[in-house]
Image 1 (cartoon, one colour):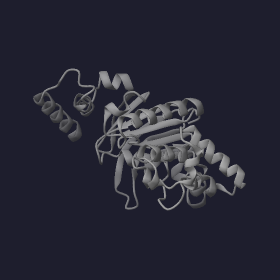
Image 2 (cartoon, one colour; image 1 turned 180 degrees about the vertical axis):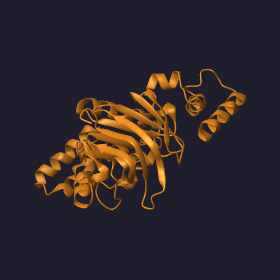
Image 3 (cartoon, one colour; image 1 turned 90 degrees about the vertical axis):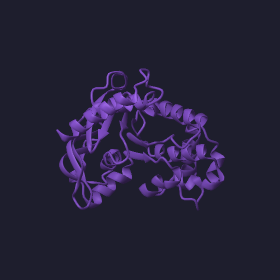
Length: 277
C-alpha cells in the first residue's frame, strides 16, 4: 500500500443491511493519478466512492486509504479519518455541499472549522487563497450561493474541497451541468491544481467521452463489478469487454466506426452472456 493512495482489494461492499452492492472489486489509485470510473446509473460507481470515504460496510476483502484499512476504523478513529480530509468529494450539484443560507466563504472554510479554531485573520487568508486558486475573486466569500452563477458555484465547491489539501479528490460528474465554456474552465483548473498539488483524482461519469481527455486510466463498472481497467487510450481504442465496447461506440465523439444498430445488439447479447457466466 505504500505506493498507493487508495485501494479496493477483492472488496465486497454493502450498506447497513449487508446486501452486497460491489462484488470482488479491485481498484488501485496511485498518488497524483487521474482515474475515470465509468458505468451506467446503479452500476456501483457511487458505492466505490462512498467506500473510499468510509461510508459503507466492507463485507469481504479490503478498502484502504492512505495506508489505513477502513474496515478496521470505528467510531472515534473513523470520525478522525474523515476530519483529516484525506479524501474529498465534489458533487455534480454544488448546492449539495453549499448551505444556501450562509456566505460561501463560511462553506469553503467548513472543513477547517471542524478541525479546530483558527485565528480570524488566518481563516480569512485561507478562504481568500482557496478562492483565488480556483480563479474566483475573494470578494465572493461574502455572497450566498443563490447570488452567483452555476459555474462559480462549482468552482466554490472545488475550493471547499481543496482547502483541506486532500490526497484524493472524488469528482462526481463535476462538469455535466455546466455550459461548454465553464466545463472547459473547471477541467483546466482541475488539471492545473492536480499538477501543482499532486493529489489523485477519481472522475465518476456515465459518459466515456467526458473523461477521455482528463484521465490516465479508466475503470469500467457493470453490475457491481469492474469489468475492465486500463490506460485511457487503450480502453478507448481497444476495449476488451463487450460493455466497454458498447460504451465506446455509443459515445458520439469516440464512435469513429459508426457502429450500426445490429452491431450494438450483438454487443448487448455478449454483455448478457458475460453477466450470466
